[in-house]
Structures are given as structure tokens and as C-alpha cells.
Image: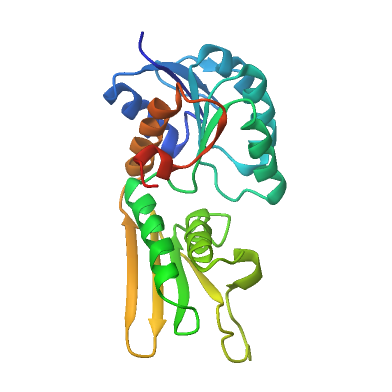
Length: 253
């Protein structure tokens, strides 16, 4: 029997690409939620109804809906592929609680290349001591993006922090303005740029006195996110409850 995939936010920019990628993967489109104009796909009134009709739900909606979706999908025992960015600590706690009952793949970015960059970032951070190499992250997105730094930038920062054995919250500096003083040792800096219709660009720089090492990822099409999310849906469908990442999907541990 073919995997039945539901799409929360099926009429959004990524949602429309997900419809195409579900078909390309040979899966069945169970339907979606939100808005009108879903083409041939059935539109359900809410995520609860979508969960009942689906083997897996892919969700690229909005942070304000995450806690509700977590409760509903955990109750329905429907695996969840979550790509919504800008989650608060409370949102992430709700996701972790839901993962006690259902399998969840949660990623700030489902592009396979970003996942590889994140893994490399952690390894580089472990090898390059913070006393000698300053870590800076620069990201740019389209002018409509509402959260900053981006979820992907924060994920990269967390990878660097893990490599250094610290919590990101203890060393994060988001933006600098005015007389900010000398850069503290071990700080992980973030700069967010917004303009035009940039899909997503992320640069991680390790700056030493004698050398610089840069990791750069540029997304030219949102289809990379959709392709990765459908791949994650196929992977998670038969997994036990737990919170997984795209590193798990790609076998990068």
C-alpha cells in the first residue's frame, strides 16, 4: 500500500511544491488544510481531520499553530514532519512532549545540503578552538520573512555550540550596534539580512588570525525543502516515537 501523505498548508508556496514532490515519490496525496485552490487534493477543515486520513503529515505552516498541531498529531498517533521556523521555547517543548507518543522529524531546513553543512559545522567547531577562531553566521532571506535570525542560522549556531561543548544561549550575539566593545572570546555572532526574494543564503565563518574557513549554502528554489521533507516523510512513517532530525534521515551520525 502506498504511503498517504497529508500536507498542512497545502496552498502555500512550499505546500504547492510538496504536492508535486509527493507524486514524484510515488506516494498518495491524502489532502491538505488551509485556504482554497488546492487543485485536485481534498481540503480538510483542520489538522485533526487531516491526521486521520494520513499516514504522515508534513507541516510548513506557522509557529502560532505548532502547539495545537503537536497535541492533535500526538493524539492521532500520526507521524509528523515539521518544517515551521521561528518556534519559541514553549513550542519546542510541545514538540518534544508530542515525540513521546509519535515519531517526529523536526528540522529548521529540509534541504539535504544544509543538513550536511550543519554536520560539518559541528565538526569544525570541535576542531577549531574558540580562543583562536571566531564564529560568525550571516543569513539573507526574502523581505516577507518574519523571524530573525532564521531557523537555519540558529541551527547552525547550535551545531557550532555543540562542537564547542556550550549552550548557544550563553554565547549568542544577534546583531551589533553602536559602541559594542571588543568581541568576547567564544561568542557566536549572527547577522540577518532581508531583501528582494532571496530563498535562503547562509554563511558560517570561522575567522582566525592567520586563516578563515567558510561554509556557504545557497538555496535557489524552495523545491529543495519539499524534496527533503517528502524524503523525511517516507523515512519516518514506520519509526518508533521520538524526536528525529534530518541528520537521522540522511544517516549523518
